[in-house]
Image (tube, rainbow, N blue to C red):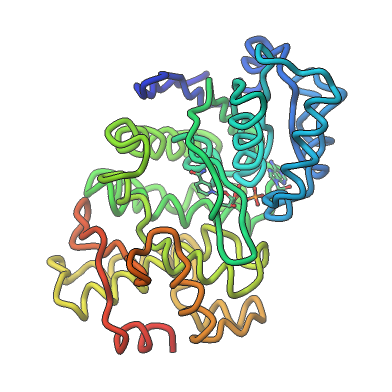
Length: 353
Ligand SMILES: NC(=O)c1ccc[n+]([C@@H]2O[C@H](COP(=O)([O-])OP(=O)(O)OC[C@H]3O[C@@H](n4cnc5c(N)ncnc54)[C@H](O)[C@@H]3O)[C@@H](O)[C@H]2O)c1
């Protein structure tokens, strides 16, 4: 059973969610060059009928200029031309790097996505943002190029490390909070069945719900100039955490979960929070999703110093900032946020302490 969601961007595409998605990708993308990492290749590449994938390093190590250059050289050596296409098989890091390589090679070739992590299925594979990191900060170089199709095969989640699975739940929490009450309630109701090792159908529903919610936002603002910024809830904090810990140590969605709590607290302290029950409600949901709540939990679990001064420095280089001032998305109530908020230094210091 496959659920298909249409994303009506300028170049529209379909997101297929369910246990037969890889089989469909094998049919529809038979000529594409598969790009994946060495962990995912032996697990899932054969399902695409692929024996000669272009291999990347795992996770954030793929998101560098050096890897991008090597991939572009390899596309040329393999003789790819403007009619060729790539198929990114893996997590968000593979998708981001492969999408960026596709958008640059010969000024742009097609790229489809086969996301194999929960985070990539419900978030990163949809929306057309691609990126690599710089030593100065996360995702500082990238492009916008929508995929030609997305195949989210929920069976692939069975081999995912539990921590990576929870990272996907962090982005799901964000999507539910910005989407509003109906999705938030569905997430609360399904919490027990979407944990690592959870029910494939429940996970499929979660992925489809989040893809629909993200798709609706992206369609209205493909290039992240306005309303799409809502998707950055928790991300100014999260990107600084990932940078401060060293890319790859704290999974993206885990950092996002902590970023959400910091944003809620900032919103409460600035008097922007309309729904006074939100902090407790989100804390209770995060506990059920086995997500951390604060920086100290991260410091303890990952052995990362996450020094306030280093986090603050990282935020100054965040690409959402303006006039050398970091900007934040602050929750107001489920389905409503304040965009582009500045925080007073004293509040920032309190939150990072
Ligand atoms: N482009 C976007 O819109 C967007 C949105 C959100 C996040 N991102 C990016 O996505 C990245 C995070 O992606 P992620 O959470 O998917 O992690 P990831 O891509 O870093 O992958 C994490 C690990 O999971 C492994 N893995 C992947 N699929 C597996 C499977 N089915 N079984 C076993 N292991 C598997 C990978 O080999 C890797 O070691 C970050 O770089 C983040 O910035 C991009």
